[in-house]
Length: 585
Ligand code: PEP
Ligand code: MG
Image 1 (tube, rainbow, N blue to C red):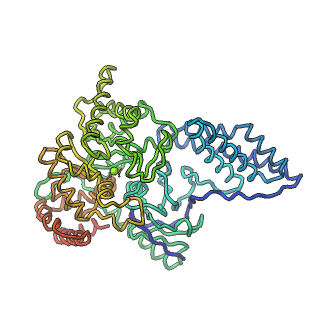
Image 2: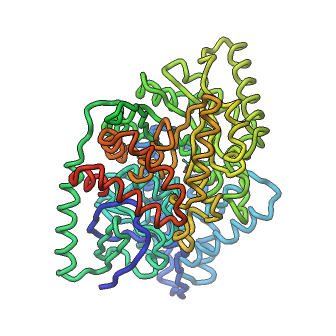
């Protein structure tokens, strides 16, 4: 038995088999084959190609039905490779002339193929290299009889163990088959953690040595609350965690989902509690957990995991479905936020030294107005189907906000000229996630219909702590006095200009911080749907005046630890024991 420690980012216990996705390449053996073995090797090549074609075709169908977008074309290049006679003849020639095994011959031919493409001065062909490498790995796994880690095709329930998961992988996972996520890297607000919490799947990130220590198919336990992973558990620890799992399941069932949609303190202060969503699967959860609309729709997930860009029509259909579903409540569309730890595979996005400080979010959109405009037009068109609001991510100053708004105005003019309808008075908000935006909030508030504080980023940029780096995760503290003071000044500057303020960062879903945020006047909280009942329960069971009373003292404290201890102590005083316990699960 081995016990590994990481960062518990999504609570709960999972017990099951490990599906390990290693970062390293497949090891291809080189063997001499005899004259009589040649025809068998050629047969193995054909068999692997046919099986892979079948696998791709199934995957294609599955993605089309499950994700609901037209992802079919992702696989065009895969088919081209599988049917390329020149490549296939080259492999056969090698087997015959060099007398080598098929895996080796195939990997040599692919290497030649790739290096030829890379030498050509053709961007499109260069981009196909990723597809060719992907298909080559699939074919090789068939030859080597290794199970492919095609995540969308899982037959049994598993705990996923990976170095990291690309957002495109997480997006296409069959969520009902996942008992947990374990990754080597990552922090509380990296994308895997966010998705895991949204879907209520236990997750431990930043384990560093998980893929090194966990074998494919071995029995493991994940405890997402304490950040523990147990590999090959003894009977004793298995029993212990089975008990924990039963208790956790009971507690989750007991979480009370308030019937009333509005959250209101005992002394009459109403606040809106809305949901953050990334994927279409989360839509039913928004209602199920009683959220008042969508306060953050991370639209970039539609752009991930595909080679082409979604057209205006495709985006319009997807957005309109969300808007209709959530109506009469509003949907806040956050325009594409790629970069950071979310990358497009398509439009020549270079790898950067510091992606979180680089070509990300609004910077990318302003530099690629054709992509930006296509999205804005689709969002505007969807606004006739309900209440739509737009917000721009990672604004660092008023110049970027003005530029983005100008592009939005151009889109409105175009749509009017084309006779297409949209909400003329659509609200436009600014995300406050960069310290320079927080410090100039008074100026930004004058030109914004609302603010949404993105603490996941605001914390990383204020404290200089990469949100996805497990090595510095201990410094990632929402309760840091610098963060609290910055947030307070943003809310004050906004309110002076009558601009309402929402928070869509993870911080708003921690009961103790929600208590503080209510006290400093936050108007709206937005969080992963499963977190909504807790925060609503909190708001419904406290007085605004108590939350407000604790603000001064909280802001005078000098360490995050003191802040947390104080807020928890205050909550314990105010709430019943049962309510306090439920909030702390
Ligand atoms: C944030 O930064 O707090 C936020 C909500 O945006 P994201 O997590 O998508 O960067
Ligand atoms: Mg952000």
